[in-house]
Length: 324
Image (tube, rainbow, N blue to C red; front, side, top):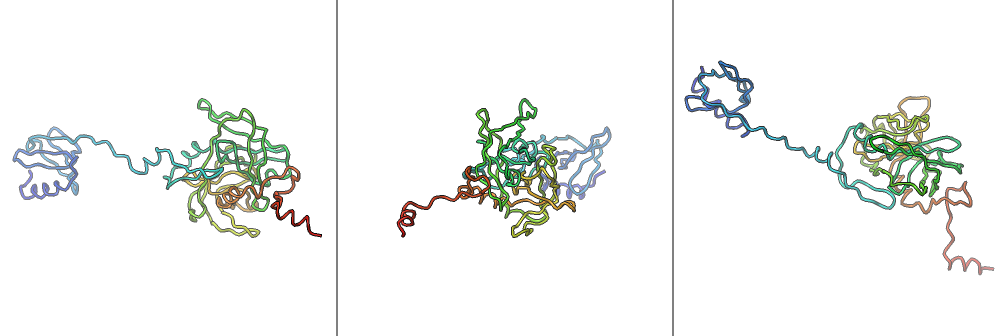
């Protein structure tokens, strides 16, 4: 049997509970506010917050159940379901505002179509689309010295991935020293391509989870996951991202993603006598290459030259000609 002083203390605490709690009205005109855990023929079990009370059924006048409130969507869930805004800068898009983190499984389903396989007579590599018009990034060493390039794309058709091969591929620009190449698919029947946004290398932190999609050893659409080991690994005068995500021959030119679905690097090499020692070109280097692609424009007259040297201004050219 409940005693009055104890019941008053329970009622006082009950007032602090949420208004969506159940209410147990007693015959002595008092009430309990809490969560009804169980109703038995002879007693009712009520959780009042700090303890659980067993109330005899003969002391209860009425039980009022709270309406089941629909759980409000959290900000993070809203961000996951809402399409992420992007800003297009030249050939590529960047994310506008922070994106919610997602699982690798969710991101692979969203981004997988934008990752391609780049084939040449000398071998194969990976790449990814920058925009819907068919511009894509890969490594310079994937297409170095090659004149026949094809791109294999995996597109969703009726819930299935359909493999399509495009052979009209043009080299737009390339930088041997940064190991980057910009290609464009020019097949007449080419559709609009799924593409991925570019992130920010500076926003990465050591220990952040990352994952790569590519075609190691020709095994297309292979996903490997790891962490960011370091952001500033110096090799041959350049800085690289080092990751534990497995990188193998065939991954070259593929994207390294963060868990926001943004490309943060371009995978290009590994240390062969160790495990978990993969490297990627920071995406900020890629952006610089794309923003200054005219300086790295491919010259068909000299395929082995990664640069195109422009003619001097006409006034300067005339002065040079007039000199004795």
